[in-house]
Length: 444
Image (tube, rainbow, N blue to C red; front, side, top):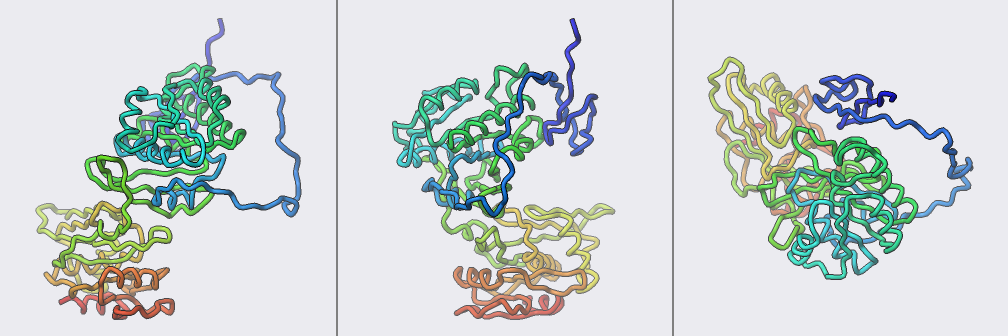
């Protein structure tokens, strides 16, 4: 009997190799290579082409029709709604609220067309309990199955417009000789679900679990196979959740949706700026406005300095890039005379949001400077601007939208660099600064 051939596949990036390595040669992840059997190709299979080549000018263009889920934050992240025949992956840590949000969306979509909810983790009784808690009507079609062949047969019989799969780690393809959740199984099951979506026009939602260690093959490998990838962020012990689009073939990839976990399901947060403001004006605090897609959000940045007992002081940034913090500390010391080389520096973005907008540079710098000199910004003052290596404060995009959001939240003064795109806003005084030293002069 011939020896069965095997290969090793990375659960993070899908890289294949004939030998096992502790570290993936492609993506550099540790302990992610999984041994899988090599399936010999069927030489008798014929290659069927979908269509011949045509000129692009002869292709009829049309806008993709979208179906609203009536969950505003979810529709925003999806780009306006669900496109027929699309495959949407929702990833996140276990217990963060993926199944709850999917159940609520399924209940709202029932008024549009038939919805089939397939669970490989829970029984029908458990699904009913969640549906009752979320207020989902009893007309929802539920199915507890792990075989993708059985799901495909049921889709052919019921012909739903929306298919929910919870979760991809529990689904198996009978023709693949490996355990559920393995790299090969997840790849084959996702390919089958994608084929169902493209052939029938049924929109497919897929739930994928991930862990912080990346031990389970999850959404990272599937991002190339689906149309849209959404990630839940946030601590599952906290009430607030952020839904972020990292890939979207039908919309923007910079949008976020904000939810609050309640007893009756996921509730939308209509005014997210309230989440990221502490309401105090203490030393080491500064409020800025960042852009998440087309949405301006006010965020409070806090800084704390403490005497260091180590030869190398600590630099810790929660909710922002630690390398960016060290760069700003170097600029503060060289260009503005703020010396914190012998101090431990801690910075934090209130509310758990991740700040990667360069428009928050000035707020971080002033928060650190205020903590060093024990000074604060005047009441109801916001700051916006990017800090360069020369200490210059530079404008960022959409200054007018940011300023309007500051005025709407009741701020009366905005410290910002000069920008031609910044239009006057009623009730908001704009104080222009050219460099860090001028901005630090506004601390009191």
